Amino acid sequence: MKVCLDACVLYPTVMRDILIGVARAGYFRPVWSARILEEWVRATARFGPVAEMQARGASATLRAAFPAAMTPPHPGIEGRLHLPDPNDLHVLATAIAASADILLTLNARDFPGAYLRGEGVTRRDPDGFLWECWSHAPEEVAEIVATVHAEAGSRDGQVRDLRAFLKRARLPKLGKALAS
Image (cartoon, rainbow, N blue to C red; front, top):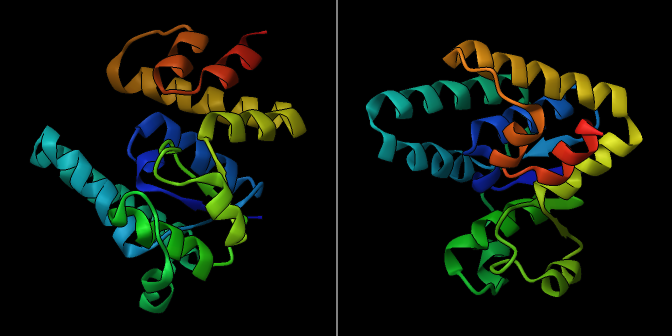
């Protein structure tokens, strides 16, 4: 299954790392565009030049790890679309051009489900999507989450409760499932 990742699910590090871990494990094929990746990088710039540089490095790593994920722009597709926020047209156009099954976003308001279904794309939120991945492969997803959790702790030296960690990462449903 192909999943178009919106910039808003790439920006939170923990969410991105879990999603990419699940993709590396083969549970979905990610797709994005240069513009989506650049939106993610620019979003980090507000935290300063070091954060932006780290995001640029992470973006380059993703490009290298998933070369088939890069979807070139398709102005013809974007030109026929209508969304509440015209700045999001390129995301849906990327999903359509890549023949993605799912558009993964935190931005439900600007991606009306009925409109997306008419384009052959289903909008999903990352928490529900990852919970579904976990329900099909609990051990594998739990291991990916445990790795991300441990890496986060080693970066900043803090020990965090897993459920609280995932809740802070906007993944409360997954956190509840893994804490059970």
